Length: 58
Image 1 (cartoon, rainbow, N blue to C red):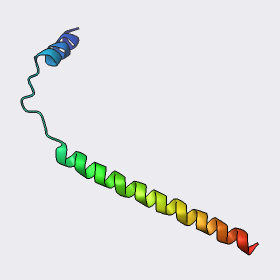
Image 2 (image 1 turned 60 degrees about the vertical axis):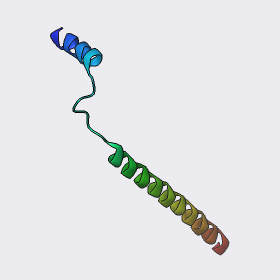
Image 3 (image 1 turned 30 degrees about the vertical axis):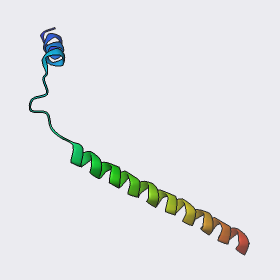
């Protein structure tokens, strides 16, 4: 019960002091996410081309 009250106190009293800034990390993650999507798209296109080549050979 005490931990619940402590958590509620933190929610209402927290003024943001000592908060961490994750702006740079978020930017890096967005960039990596973009590159992963591009790589996945390229892989899907290559797989489609390979499937077409295999179908044409048989």
